[in-house]
Length: 313
Image 1 (spheres, helix red, strand yellow):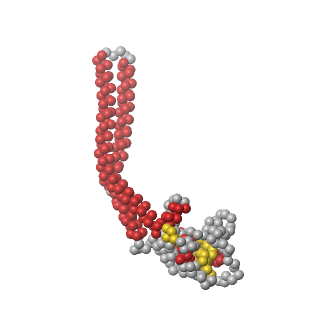
Image 2 (cartoon, rainbow, N blue to C red):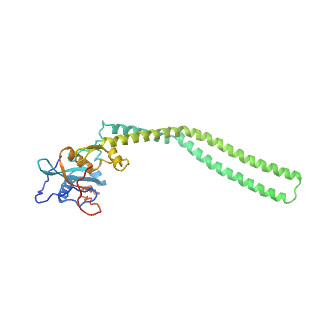
Image 3 (tube, helix red, strand yellow):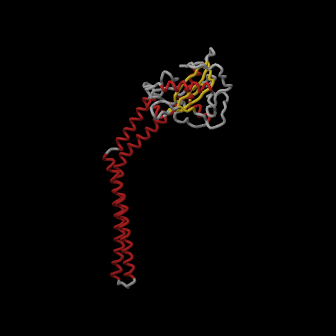
């Protein structure tokens, strides 16, 4: 897994301190390593489409126990839907292992999504939602018409009252007012009853959807927690901790999605597990829009360029 430099590195002094991952100038040894990884990628025809979309890679210059200098290479996330490729270090935790818990539980969550989608696409469910929407619009429109009629009728009655109507006419106006108000109440009640019927029918579907959504959320949260605990990372002292514990102690938050699966932690994990001493590290972005695998940019953080103390995860 450790690669020897193809060209001579004689005369290139080693850095005094290890790379700060957030503020550094790539060391000449890292630049050489990146160029060699670039050469390797240029020869590959298996990943042209994925590399055309862009991918983060990283290199870690290391020293063996015998004192030999070489480098490790890694990619961020997965490559061609796989975590293991001969040229690159393995993942800290292989979540794509077909026999592992992640793939099995992800399949269950995917099946829940399919169940939700089937319900949401059910023609009866869609029809009920459309009926309810139409019923609400119709109710609003007809209630407005009824209220407008009440206002007009009241205005007409007010005119009649100003023309000294007799008791019979006054009684008739009272009956008209009472009738129109009662009709509005009956109209509102009728729409409310119909709305309740439709909402009750819809509730059968939506309870199923909500139950599935709750199950999906619970499974997703449990899976995320278990996944974070499965990423057991080493530091330079050989101490091991899970990502959840590390982030909980340091920042009091959950790890971000994809934590532990970037190039840098993969490189350091492999070095620590195999008694390799980290010397310098660099990450680079590779994107080839022409499928020729010729684009490579070393990531240089926008800050003072220098190295920092030895990184301990």
